[in-house]
Structure formats: C-alpha cells, structure tokens
Image 1 (cartoon, rainbow, N blue to C red):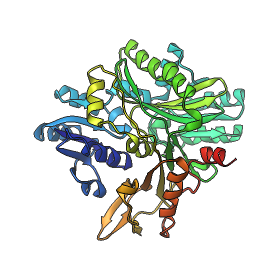
Image 2 (cartoon, rainbow, N blue to C red):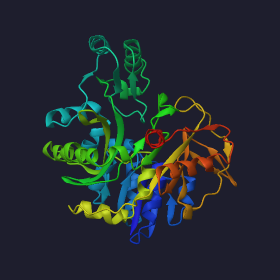
Image 3 (tube, rainbow, N blue to C red):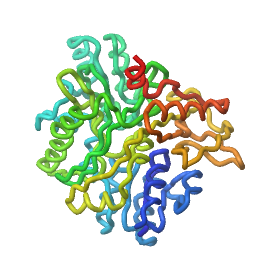
Image 4 (cartoon, rainbow, N blue to C red):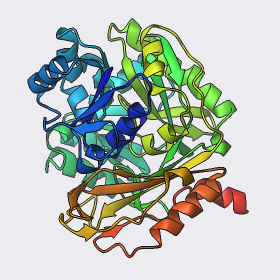
Length: 425
C-alpha cells in the first residue's frame, strides 16, 4: 500500500521513516516533505503545500494512497481531514470540529469542565480590559494563553501581575500571534512536573503510547521563552506506573468518551500535555496530533508496525503495542535567535551516525546544499539516540554533538535533567 504523510518537519520525517519500515508499505509520500525525507529509502517528497486541500486529495487519489496521516496542527484545524473523508479516502486524523480541541483552548477547557476532566481553573476573554481585571483579581503566578494556534509559543507562564498584563496586551492588542490571540485563556499556574502522554484514538477506542517529557523552554535550566520543543526523552521513569495508569483512566479515556458524547468523535493522535501535581495528573493542554519532538523519541521505541496499529484502532480494536525497554533521547539544534527572529542559510555539516548504534538525524528546517546542509527554519535538526538507559542515550547524543562546532545553531545541554538529577543524587 501507499501511505501519505502531510507536513515537512522533524515529526513528519520520523513518521515517514517509521511508515517505511512496515512490510505493508510500498511507498511513503510526504507533502511538502523536506530534502532529508526525500533521501529516506521508500520515501518521496511531493511539492504540495499542506494547506492545499484540493491538490492533496487529488494526489492521494491518483497515487492510490491507502492511508493518510497529518503531522502538523494547522491543516487539521483547517479541515483537511474533512476534505479527505468527503473524497472517500482513509485518513487518520481528527475532523475540523474535533481538531478544535487544539485549535481553541477555550473549547477544550469547556469540554474538560463539563465532563469532569482534571485541569487548571480558568476564564476566557475577548476583551482586554476584562482580562486585565481578572489578572489583578487572581494575582500571580498565572498563565496567559492565546486561544488559537501559535506554534507552541502562545503560552506565557507569568511570575508577576505585570508580566501577565504585558502578555495579555501583546496577544490581544499588539496581535503578537495574529488572530490566535484575539481571545485569551487565563488560568491558574499548575505546580508539578510536565508529562507528554499520547494515544491512538478512534471514537472510544484508546491505545496509549509510552510517555515522554518535552523541554519547551529555549535555554538550560528551563529558562527563556517557550519554543516548539528543544528536546525530549522517553520513558519518564519517575512519572510512569501509577501516574500513567491514572492519566489514562482519568484523562485520555474520559476525553475520548466526552468527544463522542459531544457529537464530535475524535480519530487520530490525542496528545495530553499533563502536569503531574500533588493532587494527581491535570491537563495543561490537549493537542490533536503527534508532539514534536516527542515523536522523535517515541516512534524509535515502537516495535509494533505503525500501519497495523492504526488499522486495528480504526477497526475499533485495542491492540497490544510492543515497545522496546530501551530509552530514547533527542536533542534539537535550532537557529540562533529562535524562537524570536533568526537568520536562515547558515551552512552546517552533520557528523555521521550509525543506525546500528541507535542514532538517527531527523530533519525539520534544513535544506540540502551539496555535501552540506543549510538552515531553513527555527528548529533545524534533531539527533535521536536509542540506548539501554536514559543516561546512556543522553550521553551518546551529546558526545556526537560535541564532535562539531555548530556556527549559527544552538542546543540545550541539559535534556532529561529531571531524571538524570534523580539518578545522580
């Protein structure tokens, strides 16, 4: 069969690589893909933009595509799934109505509140002065979020009232995130440790994956602005076990059931961005697709066939997915200045890695330039390493990165510090 992946980043590179391993798959097409995806055996980049529904559907029909998967959130919120379904094509992703779970934080919060799914107390505002009054009333710390999509950057955790007022002003008055910030959600600041917990979902069929932890802040020590993610690791030993079981039974399954009850059943990857608090797991946010860079540490650990798993879930089955006991760590190299203004076009070379050693480069914002690469985005490339322990996976990743001086690029040197600090104390 032919499989179609929509998107062009590191998550889509990982998906294409994983799909290509399936014995069921003849060809993986990726639109628009990137230069590194085009070099993967069994994969082909297709020059169609992810928002061009008509051309995407036409391509899928012409090339006998049996399964389509969307990587990024914008096409989902824009309704690309609906276009495929209307054309009678099989697609594993939520409809426009169900993708509102990510497309509108207010929508997601409303469903959580109605169905008793644990999350932070909140209020939503379309009026700046009302938002400011609420911030004054609640005090700090407090979290200000753009209601719509902002590429992972529309969340500001504010330590002071002034910081929160400024965040609301930037989103609502200055339109920092365009129309995404014309409405804001302001919520209590949850205290604890973050956990990324995703599941394959079709209606009330829910098959959880292994857990991962993402590093959202740009700099070491979890400092600096929020980014799309600077690195990740899996598993998260100190948050697995009972926490994971509770998160599945109190959050992922109830949310899948709630969406069915609301008349907007969810199909695709349900991503729970959770905070593990002293009171138990609570939802920070839901996403409607694979996380990035969590995909780069979760799919390398998946031993089951990705196509077979998705087909089983879409048939209403809950298969036992096999995962390696090995750990996986990924470190993202980003253009200097990211997530603010950054330059493109810096040349860089990648040291060779061996798949037999469990290492792989997954490309996001890069372009081929002869034997070298050049930067073409904020997050450029991630090095992912599979090893028997998290310490070993992280150490081997940094040993490889230390072989090169990365002009024009930067990366965090403390990925997985939460678990490593525990191990070394």
